Each structure stands twice: as C-alpha cells, then as structure tokens.
Amino acid sequence: MRSLDDTIAAIATPPGEGGISIVRLSGPRASTAARGLLRLGSGETPELSPRVAVFCRAVCPGTAEVIDEVLAIFMAGPASYTREDVVEIQCHGGRAAAGAILDLLLSSGARLADPGEFTLRAYLRGRIDLVQAEAVADVIHAETADSLKVHETLLEGALSREVAGWQEALGTVLVHLESFLDFPEEELDLKGGAELVAALDEVAASMAGKLETFAWGRTAREGFRVAILGLPNVGKSSLLNRLAEEERAIVSPIAGTTRDTIEVRVNALGAPVHVIDTAGLRSPADTVEEEGVFRARRAAEEAGLVLMVYDGSRPLGEEERKEALALIPGDKVLAVVNKADLGRVPEEELSELFGEPPLFVSARTGEGVEELLRRVRDRAWAGRVPAGGGALTRLRHRESVRSALEAVGKARELLAGGGYPDAAASELQRARRCLAELLGWGTPEEVVDRIFSEFCIGK
Ligand code: GDP
Image 1 (cartoon, rainbow, N blue to C red):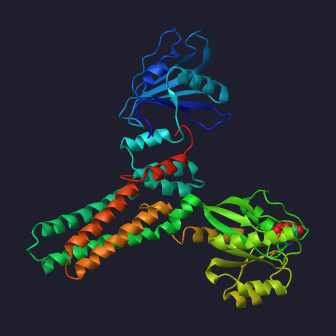
Image 2 (image 1 turned 135 degrees about the vertical axis):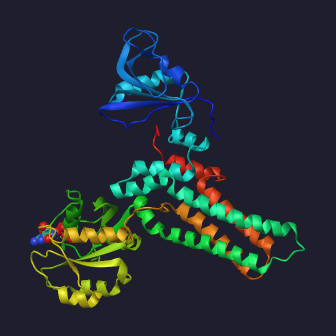
Image 3 (image 1 turned 60 degrees about the vertical axis):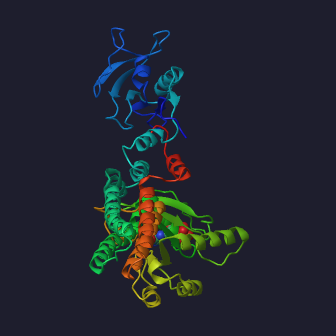
C-alpha cells in the first residue's frame, strides 16, 4: 500500500521540447519544498498564496544560481486535485529546466511520484471515484473530439450518479425486506411484494439499457477495428492511405507486397478507428505470404467491420467469388469496389452475392471516401451519436453492471415467486457490492493497481 503521508513530485508535461513544462508537487511539504528553491527578483523567498500565480525564479538553494524563470501556483488542500497541498511550477519547456527543478525538489525530501499517483491520491482521498479516475486516463488517451466527449461525461460523474441511483433504489428495497426479516411471523404481504418487484424491474431495465452503451463506449476508449481485405492489387493500401490521408502504408504495384498487417489510426468523422491493412486473401505462394494470409483472417475475425475490397476495372476472379460466398456473417462485411474511376464492372455480381449494392470508391480520386468514412463511423458508434448519459467504456464496467443485473434478476424472481425475502435480500446485497466495486469501494487492490498503471507519470 502506498503511503499518503509523503510529498510526491513529477514532471506533468510530456518529455521533449515545448513552450512550457510543469513540475507538480503534492503533499504536506509541497509549499515548503517549492519555496526552498523559489526566489523573487529581490532575492527574497515568495509567499505562496492559494490560487495566485507568482512570477519568480527557480534557483539552486546552495549557490543561488538561477535555473529558470518560472510561474509558481499554490493550491491549498482540500481545494486541489489531490485534496492535498499542491504546487505547480511552470518553467520553460524542454528537458533541462524541468529536470533540474525536479532534481532539486527530490533532493529536498520529495519523492518521485509513481505513474498516476496524483490521481490515485484524489481517488483514495475521496475526491473522485474509480470510474472518474479511469476517465482521467481515458481523457488523456482520447484520439478524437467525440471520444473525448464520452470520457468527459464520465469524468464529470454522469455514470457514477446513475450507479448511485441504482444503489439507492436497491437499498430502499433492502430496507423493506429486512423489516420483513425482523418480523418473520408476518407474511410478506402481496401488495408490498408487488411494489418491491416493480421497483426491481425499474432498476433492472435501467441497467439493461446501460449495458447497451458498451457497444459504443468501448469504441470511445479502444477505437473501432476495421480490417481491409481483398486480393493483392485491388488497392487496399491506397485506400488505407486515402482514409488516413497520409502515406503510411507502402503502396506498390507488385502483387503481394503487403505481407504483414499494418494498423493505422484514422479519425472517421469523429470516431476513433483502427484500420488494419492485411496481406490480402490470395492462396499463399510461399510461407511468408502464408503467415500474412493467416494474419489477414485473424484481423478479419477480430474486426468490428470488414471492408471487402474489389477492383472496379475487372470482373470478379474465381477466388474472390469463393471468398465472398464463404464470408463471415454479412452484417460485419461491407463490399467496397475501388478504382471506381476505371469502372464498376463487378457491380451486378456483387449486389447478388451480398444482397445489397457495393459502395464505390476511388482511392485515386477520393470519390466515395467521405461516404465510406460515414458508414465506418456509424458502425463504430453502433448507430448512436455519443451524447448524454454515461457510457460503459470498459469491460470492468460491463462486468460489474452485468453481475449486478443478474443478482437483481434473481432477487426479483425470488420475490415474484411468493417470498423468500432472506434469499432475495442476499442477492440484493450482492448487487450492491458489484456496484460499489464499480465505483471503487471494496475493489480488489490488484484491479486498482492495474488501472493506475496505465497512467502517465505526473497525472
Ligand atoms: P493492394 O495490393 O490491394 O494494397 O493494392 P495497392 O494499394 O498497392 O494498389 C495496387 C495498384 O492499383 C497501384 O498501382 C495503385 O496505384 C492502383 N490503384 C489503387 N487504387 C486505385 C484507384 O482508385 N484508381 C486507380 N486508377 N488505380 C488505383
């Protein structure tokens, strides 16, 4: 267990060159340690008043040698990110100044913070719950404005409030059940029982609705996987470059050059999408290609959407026809005819094979690419524009809600079946434990550790 008594320090800005860097301190000695190396122009040590930016210099305490001009900001606990005293020192960007300031703070008794330790303290001190702490990491990792919105909603507490609402509703039912249990000679009267069942139904419906948000909440966090499949030379790599709007995949006119899979992150009109370009589906000519084809199939299996790409300038080959027939359940596959600038030759046959007309695009001219991005985006968000209400963004969220819902369902059946208030009560207690764990109360330490290990240093 980490100590909460000491003062931690870290550089909060990413390594590398930039306008400014920020060194952050949190803990009981934050102000003292910072003041130890801050000097005004007059040579005096500045007072640090809460929420006032002080322009001063960071100096080596022993020699008074100036390291950099800085702005120091003090936030007195509990009105701070960690609920402890926090000081942020803004110096010039780059490694040198921030590194020197951090070294001085560490030699004056502060300890280097672990990744995510500032946020861990905010969580352990009860300023935020575990769902909000996770959202902090997800906000930092968000790839598009829309996925940022999803995580900001969780950070602001939307999901936490809903979970708390369920807990309260279950708590009310529990109180009723426990009063029956206290007077076992009284029967659970029918009217009372029906009301409790109705209350549980309401909670269960709300939980079931929430479980559906995982379809797009997961996209916000992990990105939506799209695999591009098709024979060599149909233009898969060119299409990928078009989607990514940069030359990241190697485009070559020689069949079979994309032997490995290439993954490129694409902002599909707001949806974070990971497009995987594969080796194509041709029967392998050598073992390197065999491995490539194997990976292509695996990429297709793991993807949320498969773009099956065809060449508009020529009729379908035998292999393409076979592949189209063998394809993975229809709704995961979108038939795309590339090189539409050259023709739409396989249109009729593909419409017949897929039961709907293919989408025509040209990686060369850009025709149809916007429509393709739109379709990818709609799949990625599972047809929902991410807005309002907290989405379940992690498997952990889904598992907790699922287990809680299962327990509520059992309690409901027990009550509807004419009684068993003690068994129903224990199911409801289990449901409440699942929800508490979701919010971070009683969550196993290894789960908490895993969550905070994803953070960067300084957050
Ligand atoms: P891959 O093997 O499926 O990845 O195909 P490539 O992306 O390497 O493209 C194969 C060839 O088709 C290259 O010569 C590309 O320039 C060409 N090509 C790709 N897309 C288009 C397109 O939309 N129109 C035309 N006319 N040529 C294209």
